[in-house]
Image 1 (cartoon, helix red, strand yellow):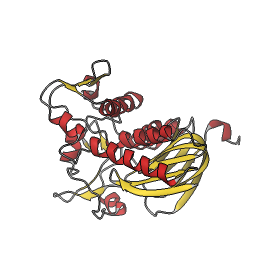
Image 2: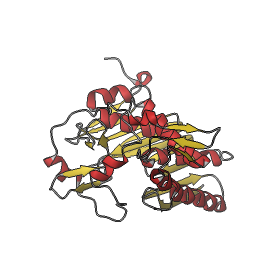
Image 3: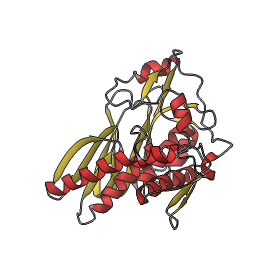
Image 4: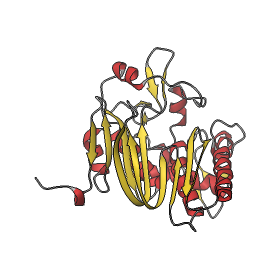
Length: 301
């Protein structure tokens, strides 16, 4: 079993599979190329070129079309809560440059000063619905000035792509910054976003697992308020919903990533319904851990 970890996409990427080291080297190059072409922090990337292009229809590579398409799928799946057109709002919140290597502000400090908790809502304008991927024409259409961020869904898409490329191997784990694609049966440990402790183990057989947490990127803004990278599309501000972490299981890493964000942004009550079909883990503001078991595993009172 080969096990390697390297840094890419602003996070750690882990490849674990029953194959030789040279295959891991090949997949590392694939991930690094994927990340460089879709980074919003590299001015020459394909994503930055799309966002800067004044035309309403822009030629786009297969990779860029797949990444934007994944973001639109997540928006549709989440009712607009996972919105790929929030880049302007993310930058206004203070996440303009990569935070790689920057010491994060403690989440516990941010929670003490966070505003009243409430579920996030979708943007009534639903800007993402004005974005179209045309594979036949190899283009992406969107109103000029609408800028796209493929960050979160891009990691899930990348994990799924690498797992597909490792299709000849029986047991595979591809972990792109917490978005995990698996083949075979594995036990996936869930960490507490406030303490880092192991709080639960999920046993999965294929598909994907993903965790969304406020602890990953927290910073203090110039006005003294605290911010993080998961925004409420309805307000354009960081979402404080009563949850600080959500781990979801899905048919793929992309789906699990979408469900974990949807759960966290929805707040505790709706999050339970989001995770109920396949199960998952919720971590509340006060540190309480809630295990959401799928119906077949629930025990009658």
